Length: 109
Image 1 (cartoon, rainbow, N blue to C red):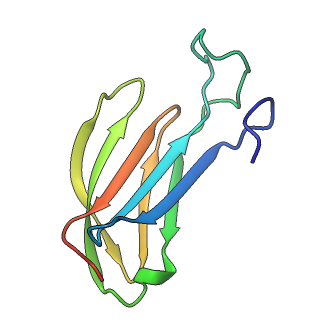
Image 2: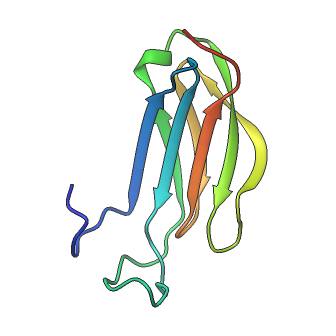
């Protein structure tokens, strides 16, 4: 994926298993009606999304709790209520220029 000019994706999601066995998920919403001056390339109009993430490796794990944090224009590392993944699937809402990070609570092998 090229991030040098134009055509930046509205959403970016990444998932990884951490060395301690926990799971991490990051979701970024790259939309805004008014990009800060430090952005040299205009983006897409502001849009909030409801995102459903499916992690195939966790489909048989039953219920998993994830610590959730938000960073963006309105929040600076805001810790929200934990999110529950059921059978490898969870849903979160993300707002313009926001980053949501999720980390599973407890180890999962």
